[in-house]
Image 1 (tube, protein in one colour):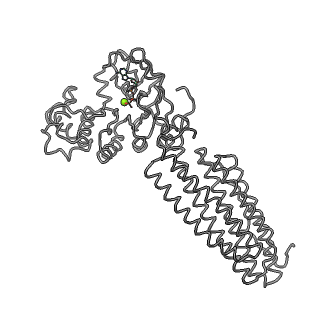
Image 2: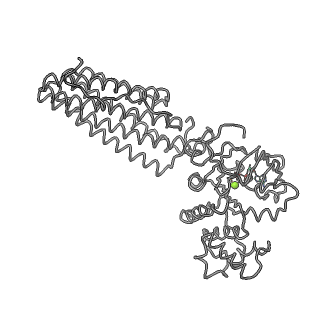
Image 3: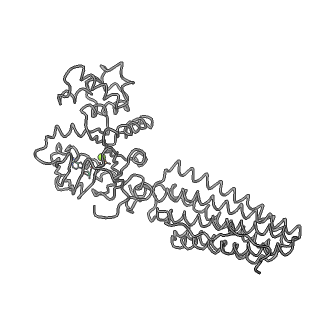
Length: 241
Length: 263
Ligand SMILES: Nc1ncnc2c1ncn2[C@@H]1O[C@H](COP(=O)(O)OP(=O)(O)OP(=O)(O)O)[C@@H](O)[C@H]1O
Ligand SMILES: [Mg+2]
């Protein structure tokens, strides 16, 4: 929207809402980056920092919720403004959820590092995390600039997270079959991978919501989901490696 | 309409259809080539900044503009199979089919009963005294006022509160059994409770009547109407289902107005 609102404080409230959301996005991306680094470096101090940092994120979400409700109650926005407030509120919930999943990942890192458990290869997991970090960065840019095309692109990107998740699932099953002592570490990696896969879904949901926010229409057609792990069985007598 | 793009409309049979309506006050054009369908048994809200021509357009529907000397209306407004501006139309009869409620409640300086009985009397709608009483009571009930005034029907209409007076005017409009009721900012002088009562009343009235309302309150338009038409500088910028207009208007000018960016 080009024009300024007649009521200046309305514009101020809206800017504050946007800023809070962007801040949350930045923090979520940083948390995930740190959690991933902690895993790679087996850094328990960093992992604990990530767990603590999530509280700050929850606080920001609470503040954003209060502000959005205040705007709805006192300003009664319509049309594009209404969509912006409601979608920002909804998308902030997705960011908060990504934060929770990141915290869980850091807790698991702490557990396996402390136990010095063998996890097998985690390159695929790292790659999944990097894709999701990119997705978060892009979706926040799409929010800031109102870029519907970029949001559409991000929505499609989630497929590559699913594909990596499938590959990792197979890798981990194989690794666990090789040596029972690997199971504990591998299970944690599997759960971390599931966490990251869920983060990707949350970003894809934000992307869908941004498309609605910008255009007033929900994107047509179902997003292609490529997570096949729910259907995977490995036959121990017939493992392809 | 100059622009083709409109928000999504709820299809419903129009009871009234305006096509290519122009209105002039002397040389000054107040309404420019407006076409709009009024769907039956729905509430249509006319919104837009002050001076954009909402009241002028509303008055076209029952030829109230005829009472203004300098005012000239051209174009076509179809109601009940004919152009209401045709010379064959009996304007008094037309106004009994299409009633009007104004911004400021304007009860006659008569009793509550006589205020409502006035229309049926001059139109000769009641055969007996009992029948007239029936009409008055039914109208007061439909206007949601009867219970509050049943024991003082002979007191002056002006003794009522603002909200009650406005409902009295609605009862008066209903008494001649119209099909359409035009309302020009009927709640602008009322407090939120009295406003809510009238809005609730309108909602129940739409089963029997078609309502066209001019309102300055976006919230009111959003709450009560099914169709919204946005006017700006004498033009109809956009009309469509209220839900679409208030969540996803097609025109930038509509977007700007309803979100408080042009006054
Ligand atoms: N009786 C009249 N004689 C001359 N010009 C008039 C008359 N009534 C209205 N106008 C002009 O026609 C235009 C439209 O007026 P109208 O009253 O229809 O606007 P409106 O949208 O109802 O405004 P508001 O929201 O302030 O009631 C205005 O420019 C007004 O000055
Ligand atoms: Mg007016």
